[in-house]
Length: 234
Image 1 (cartoon, rainbow, N blue to C red):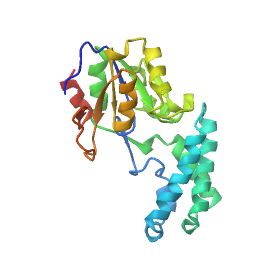
Image 2 (cartoon, rainbow, N blue to C red; image 1 turned 30 degrees about the horizontal axis):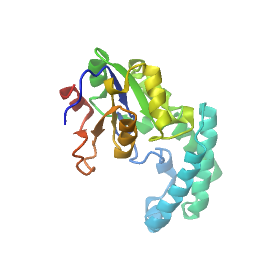
Image 3 (cartoon, rainbow, N blue to C red; image 1 turned 30 degrees about the vertical axis):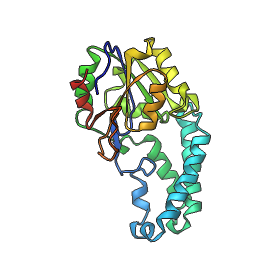
Image 4 (cartoon, rainbow, N blue to C red; image 1 turned 90 degrees about the vertical axis):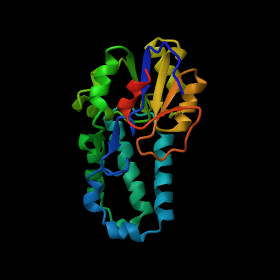
């Protein structure tokens, strides 16, 4: 697969593009690992655990217009209370829910940047306008600021600001409007094929990043396995 030139703008996802979760799960912050007994968790049928997370995540998705970290904190406090109610075997106390919520919102160590991210952004920033299109929350700005990369981005499209998630076309149109470039002169890098299809439907070129190497081969989408590989195709 080849990209059509010229390309003047590049949009990036955040999760599994620039960063991974420190615990392996976006909704399980480091503090939670201090309170959740692994043996107890493993004793609960996986179907029940998956169902609990699905129900609680649905609450987040259906109430996703979140403009401040204070609103984000309230949302996640409710999320972890719901999760505790669905999985009472974990014996998570109200105080522990408070500590877990604070860690989820304010602890930037819950995000691990891939080694090639900053150097690649430095190179891309020399030639292209850069933007973010991500399903995320207000606190992600703390993470990007601490990593010293927030200033690389000309535009930012966070789902929490719009109240919708990818692949809703509002996400891509918001990004394009702010970057002020024709869609065909931009590309979007994401780890989910469905999100890339949403971008493609809006005229944006797409690149699948498969860092976990778990995606089925996509014959119609350029695929890379680490962020810095993008430089080879531009």
